[in-house]
Amino acid sequence: MDSQVETFLNSLGDAERAGGRVLHELTGLAQSLELREMLKKVGHDEGYYAGELAAHVRRLGGTPSNKTGDFVEKVRAVEDFRGKLELLNRGQRWVIRKIEEHVPTINDAPLKAFLVVMAEGHRVNIGALENALTAGLR
Image 1 (spheres, rainbow, N blue to C red):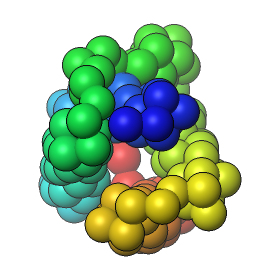
Image 2: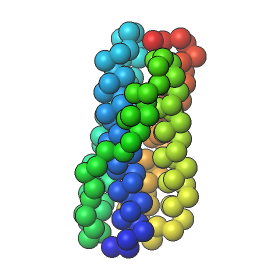
Image 3: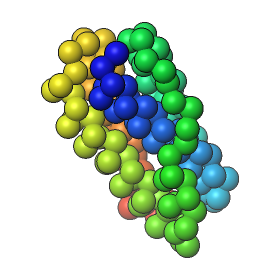
Image 4: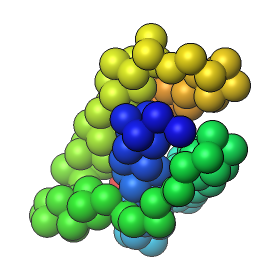
């Protein structure tokens, strides 16, 4: 497996695991049932993406990481709940940006297709969270 691709996929996996942990914590803090359900759904997506990234690394002959990115501590450091949610969306945008930067260099068709779908899933989740923030859900 190309070491740059392996490093890229593992960095995304680390970020997805961090996002999943953050979402689990934020779900517990959410006051509205609607926001709680939305955060659980987004957290589920993060876990799915982390698992699929690891599967692609293994399929291509690499070694998947099991680390969790430092994003968890960054979100914990934010005082207010809304600020935590806004930082979560910035993290989601980072993932999209990284995917868009790397997709043109990916030669494996199944991996490329997965990454495109993953980026779109993050766009959907960003939109859902932005709608919740606009609606004033806590």
